[in-house]
Image (cartoon, rainbow, N blue to C red; front, top):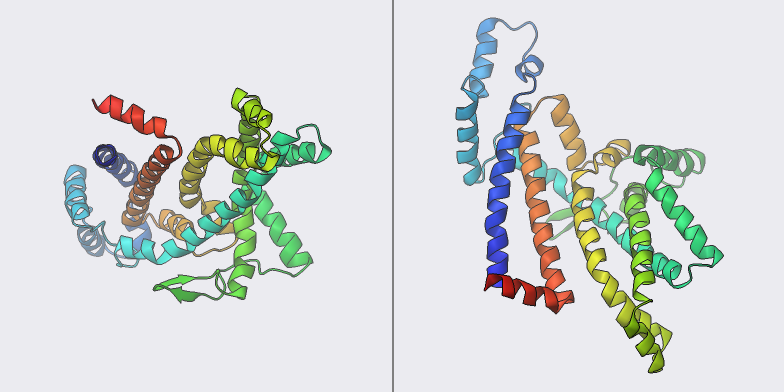
Length: 327
């Protein structure tokens, strides 16, 4: 197991290096931040001074080398617009995004797996058909439209929930969180639901398909012949065997929710990393954009590593296969 983790970490270093090069070239080849950051009435001396202060007067390969050298020491540059270190800006917004992503995934898991199990165990019932029809809507409806409809219904018409913001927060181990306050939950509920809708539909269909496949296996018939109860068959034999693809989807989608919560955070004015990214793109704040992308890549790498470790715990055959490959 240790050799497997070390091998994956070495692969991750190569992925981070390749992504840093691609992102750096892509971002630094677009536009000129000086046109946005410098007063239009500034003279050529002021413009040249600003270019030199931002380090944009050097060739692109020297800029990348300087960026890479600083990154190895944990410095991903300073924001062009605020002068604050890019990582500091991102870490200030990260708790809000992680909280939103975690709550949305919990909603998707808490509803998606039970509904998918029911639909798989009783595929001909009316409720099962209604669940599958609802999952199609979850795939089809655009996130921005659902968010606007949620605001229209629950904020404008009913006045039950606030439309924007994060609400009251409290410190938990030095990190501000909103799920521990009633006002925070009132602000969190709509964006988390909006973000959970796609993953909820995905888990419903994945769980249903896995359940239908497992119920046809011989060991389910043997379990019934031995007189095991339906609850034990579902809880032990069915659920355990469909968890591997579910773990995969949950892990990858959690990373996707963190990375691509931009639309939801923009609609609900949620002060997370996605909104920071949009603001940075509008201002051509290159250090923040590059730091954000690299941090997201690192998150995906770590999430994939955790998923692989969970694989080996859920299915010992994966550990045996890895050991055989190592020999």
